[in-house]
Length: 190
Image (cartoon, rainbow, N blue to C red; front, side, top):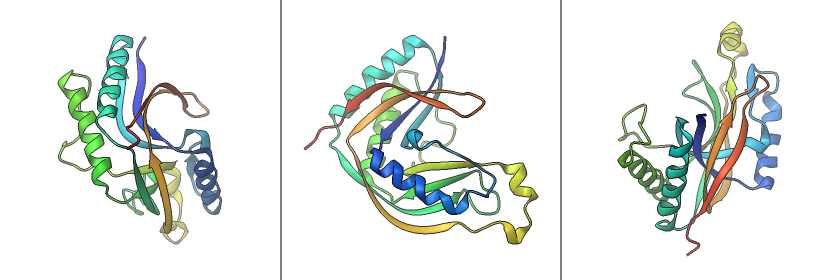
């Protein structure tokens, strides 16, 4: 049976709690909120994979993790993505990071070499560090009058350590996705 999987950097329960409280000011908006236990920093979405592929992906994330030191990501903004006119998600958006870019590129390369990853867009496009707080219910958003649609662009200052890569299965249910950590590979703690 196939598994729907992605790679992520986990975040601490304290930061998850903090992220959860920020969304209270927008609870009346047509947004399907991510459960706080599911908050993570997205590295790569891999999609549907066969069980034997998941085993190989697990091996590869250990190999890549050994070549990278732990690092911090700075998050400075909460905003609608891709924009306020046609939003699909509400993100906590991070600053560009060479360590993050290098890690995601090395993961992508290792997986592509094994035929386990096919990017949806151009691989030259930089992966933006982000945490998804919620997904906009687009048809309900379009029903809002223009003056009812907020321009969400909050500033914040949040530093999150990236110490490991997790391989996560996403089981989709009617009430929302369930995330199951399949494997964790620690980065070097230099």
